[in-house]
Amino acid sequence: MDIISVIVPIYNIQNYIKRCVESIVNQTFTNLQIILVDDGSTDESGKICDEMAASDIRIEVFHKSNGGLSDARNFGLERARGKYIAFVDGDDYIDSDMYESLYKAIVTNAADIASCGYYEVFNDKTYTMCCAKETVVLDRVKTYEALFSRGAILGCTSVNKLFRKNIFGNIRYKVGIQSEDLELLYRILDKVKTVVCIDVAKYYYVHRENSITTSVFNKRRMDVIYTSEEMMQFIHMNYPNIMKQAYAYQVMWLIGGLKSICEADNRKEFLGEERYIKKIIRKNYRWYLKNPYIYWGEYILLQAVMLNAFKPVQYLLNICVRIYHKIIRN
Image (cartoon, rainbow, N blue to C red; front, side, top):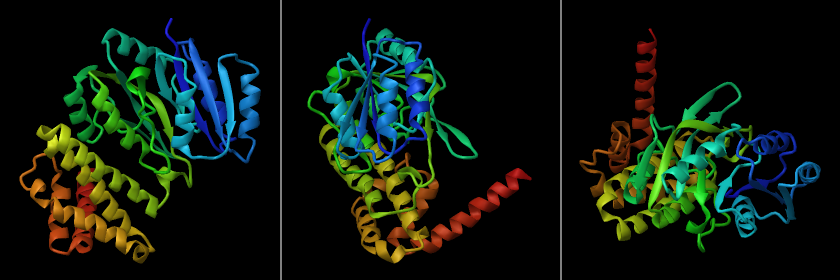
């Protein structure tokens, strides 16, 4: 049977790692190589990994100096023996049949990537994300379109996917950025012929207090803006027929960045970043006109940027949205 290599970067998550690894160990697809990369943890995470490896020969633990998430994933990729590659973040967990479901889908459809939905898990709420209503098989261009449709069935994360190893080639995660998933995904999709998205959610993406994904705006959050600029150049050169979809996707990140900056208590620290985002919007404005893929609220805010009125218009929109939700609840 084919081997799936599951790569788990670990850094100071001693309270979460057992749940994560146990959810992998207990998979109904059992032919796994479980690669735990202790990325320089200073708590008990590394020790816990060693203890779990002693009870399951499929677990391989590597201890290295801290290099960040991308570096740990790349470290694991170099040591993966499987025909297929999967990634799990060390504070998350997965359903027991996740890899059986993805493996069946990728083999049945002769696909290069299989993707499932996932759950965003907060302290008090759980949301289902990127889950197809039915299994969908996509060619390369349709896969890019799925990515640019704001993650409706694909998502820009690595952890809800099973990859055929040979599509990586020399492609690796870019080290030192927070947008590592999107940065790798838009490049690796250029290597695929077929992607399959299945109609179930199997991955639990846990948002911890003070984690990267739940923290307030900081300068490193600009990484996704820089990545989107590089992605747009790539799409322009290789897939010009889907530029409008790509620009609409970039707008989501641009407007999201402006909103976060405007809502930050220390907004003055990010005036340079704010100017940079607005410069991109003004440069690409012609692509936004009559673009059917841009949401109406974002289109209004794009107009506000052009009129130097982003913050007051955003404030008014927020009031309108709150009133709307209050009306429909009543």
